[in-house]
Image 1 (spheres, rainbow, N blue to C red):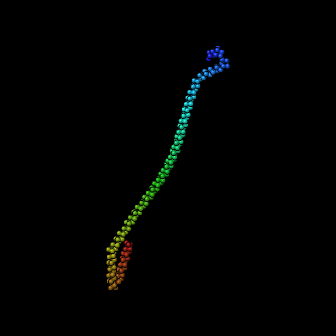
Image 2: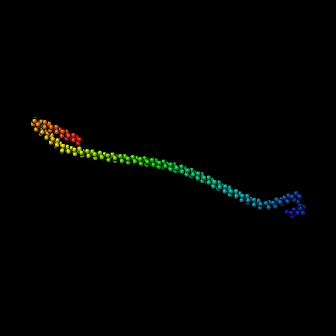
Image 3: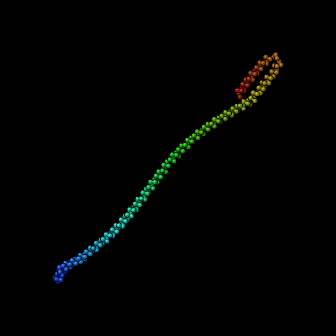
Length: 208
């Protein structure tokens, strides 16, 4: 550049203003030639920055998608937690109902045991009554047997004796009627017979 200026000045061709303008043009040209690589580098950097920005945007979008998915997962997890809570509550209700059923069952078992005890007591009482009835039957049978024996005794022993006594009494009375002088003795015999008959009658009544 210095050589070019000296050349122009030596030739005396350019004025000062033209010289300044020429110098300005040369400087601009040189600056442009030197700045162009920088501009190219800057453009490259800008392009890379834009790529980075694009990648960052993609990352941000991916991150947002991940955040959305995490939010959905959190919501799904909350729903699962709510459902699990409902299941736990239902299970607790079932457990409470089972506990009530167990208590009711125990109450029923106690009542059944009470009924069985009462039934056993009734069976025992019925057995006692049966035993007492059997005893009464035995006693009634014994009385029937005694009455039957008494009837047989009366028919086979007492009645023949009474008939004999009556016959004897009748015969004796006939004899005494024919023999008036023996009336006193007959009366005594009659009194004796009456006492005997009375005693036998009392015995029969006692046996009856």
